Image (cartoon, each protein chain N blue to C red):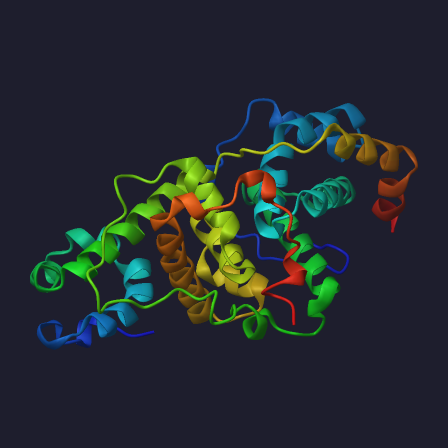
Length: 95
Length: 226
């Protein structure tokens, strides 16, 4: 992983910038799109600004998936209950 | 946490998980009763956590039938091992780790024996995100709605989907994911980045995304397997 601290932003190409993104997203501690270090770079490279903004949106929206949306069918609990009754759980608990 | 055949995970407290997994009313009592074999308390724990565990399995496996089987396995394991839960992390975090480990073990049994996911996690070139800096990039229009994002996540190649779900949805840290997937943290970060790039690509054409009812492709049959 590359460290942006040692990079020359004035001469950086979009492809080079992208190589820093995985680490930047991890260590940025905030929104990369609002980081003043990149203001000029984003002005000169609007595609990179769009990319960063989109990736931030995706990461943010992913949190909304944390709450579950799906439910198992009733047969799942029936199977569990029946296996527990048959002693499947107890067997291993004792082992 | 010691599970038969399941790699044990560190259980150091993680404040982030307590934030995302606040205690549920009645859960602590149910855990204590379930530890002493109270079947009613165990069924209460199932009712409290079945949707989260099943959704996690479904997202990781992309297949309803396998997700139900793994949900069943996860709760049977929970019943056997609940005595070892000591409250060092939120119960749901502990349960999710247990579930993730079981799903990964299931995937390895299916066709990934003795093969590190680091070698197999990378999807084929056609599945990888395209690099198109040459042309004008358009931004995603407005915010991404939850249903569309869910459909896009379901369309990700399995390796990308795994890392994205574990990190961005479930909130695991890269070092935890690396331990679970037996890869380096750098690889986990890189896969997450590629997953987000691929999602961006998919979300630009939401009309092409499959409906959620099409969760039907077992992971071991494409992408992760050899």
